[in-house]
Length: 318
Image 1 (spheres, helix red, strand yellow):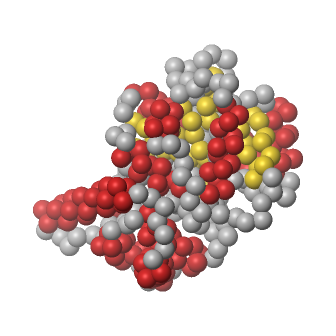
Image 2 (tube, helix red, strand yellow; image 1 turned 60 degrees about the vertical axis):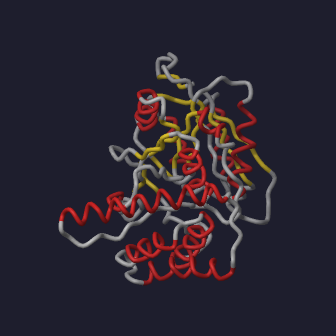
């Protein structure tokens, strides 16, 4: 349920929850909280899950929780090992705190993003106008000012920076899959389409991402290698991956970015890294990728120009 500033109930009942494993996010989380507090449509409840933070994050959250009865801090036991499955465990723990609520929308957002005051009203409006939409979001702008280029990929992908689910869709896919290597957000979105839901990124708005993608625990080079590993784990088609890596070579640092991506994918192939997804998932995912490649080539053939490389995004910042 979303309440407007006059205390009225919006037409879409909503629950917005802090999903990521918030661990040592004091540099960013206050700005994120301020963005949510300033929303035209505030959440019925926002559970901020502190996943073993030791840097003062909890104190910041507690201060806002004291001032706003719809914000709740949930402290989880500190864990020594950091991995992407921690986000899922945190999300599930927070979701249990909502069993007493009736809501129609659930959202996951990172602790290092900000957005304008009608950001969620905009996304809720999209869900309200199309009952087939299961997951919605927007692009994110990096600290450098770079915005992910959707010209070469599908707007069906929804970035993990902020994913807004229709509750029925979230429950249909069984929620997030706890994968230690990552791809948690992408698997959820693809699973939603497998279940017949639409997923959509709306480019009319953006959120600001205040940390370089994928560098929470790694250098940019290592982050690109890890992204290649995640591409393999998710089941990317080898031909798609070749075009994806070629496109990434055109981004700074030139050549090396794409090489690191392809190296991560090939290393995973030769190491036979285990995939946590089903064969049906891989088939569905690759079929979508091949359809997009064919579409890109067909469009370029009609225009008489050389086909452009195709990219896709796997975003994990934890």
